[in-house]
Length: 101
Image (cartoon, rainbow, N blue to C red; front, side, top):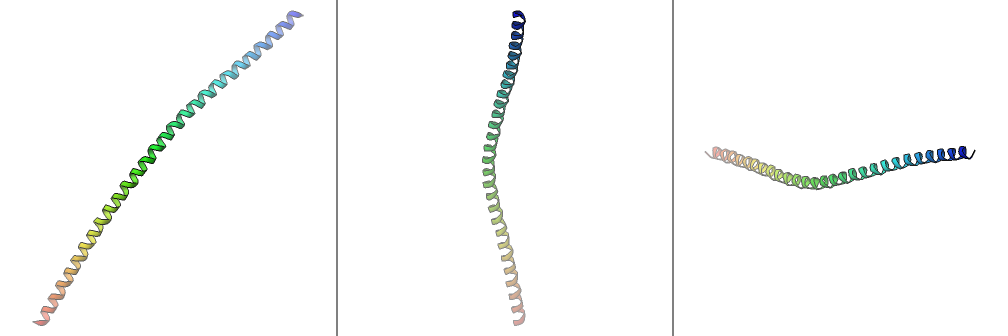
């Protein structure tokens, strides 16, 4: 009977050791997953920082381009307005000179 008790106790110990080993394996897997997740999060954070820098560069470049084309457009309107005034002056001068002749 003593042998049977020892055999059952040994069997229970082996079962518990197997469960402990299984839990240890699961915990190691979980730790590895956490480390991988941390690595991915660090990479995402780095990319987010880079995107933020790039967005600021894009915003300043877009502002420069907007100002450039605003003034280019303004110059065009000034030229068109000046040509309109010149044509109007020529028409008025021509009308006045035809009335006087």
